[in-house]
Length: 222
Image 1 (cartoon, helix red, strand yellow):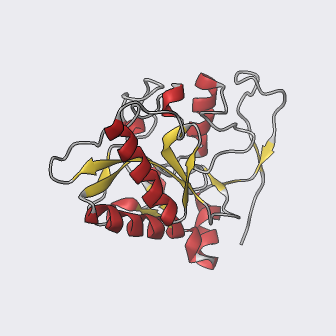
Image 2: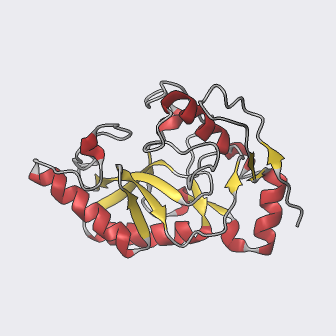
Image 3: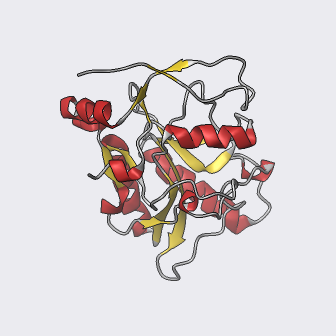
C-alpha cells in the first residue's frame, strides 16, 4: 500500500493558524488501496440502512455557512460505523422513530472551509488535525416520527451555537428533554458518544487508526 504525506497547502494565515502544518490526508487512490487490505476502512453508503432518511444540510444553503458545500446529498461512514448505526436504527424503529442524517463523512476541504468561517474549535475541528467526520467516524443526526414523518422536538435546531445545544444543557421543555435523552441513550448502547457541545453529533468510539480523507462524494461510488 502506498501512503503519502501531503503538505497542506491552504493559507492558514486566513484561518488564524500560526504556521502551515503537515497532515496525513488520503486521496482516492490511497483510500481504495487501504480498504482492499482492510474492508473495515471502506466508506458505506448509509442509504443502504433500512428506513434511513437523509437531510444533508451541506448539500443546500440551509446551513450555518449559507453556502452549498457538497455537490451531492449523500451520507457515508466507515463499515463498523455503518453496522452500528444499522443496529441503532432497528432499535429506534421499534420505538416508532427513524434516524435522519444531517451529515456523516465530510471531506477534509469542508473542514477547512468551516474553520475559516467559525474559528471556534468547540464547534468545528481545526485543520491541523482534521475531524472524526473527515475519518468517516462521526454522524450528525436526529430522529423522525415514522407515523407523522415529522422530526422529533429537540432542544435546538441543528448546527445551533447556543449553549442550549450542549448535550447536558438544562432543558425546560419535558418533551424535548425526553427526546434528547432517549436519542443519546440508544446511540450510546451501540458504541456512539455524543459531542458535549452538540446534541446531534455522535462519534463512534471504535474508530482508532482511520485516516483523514479528502474525497468528494462523487469519487466514492465510481
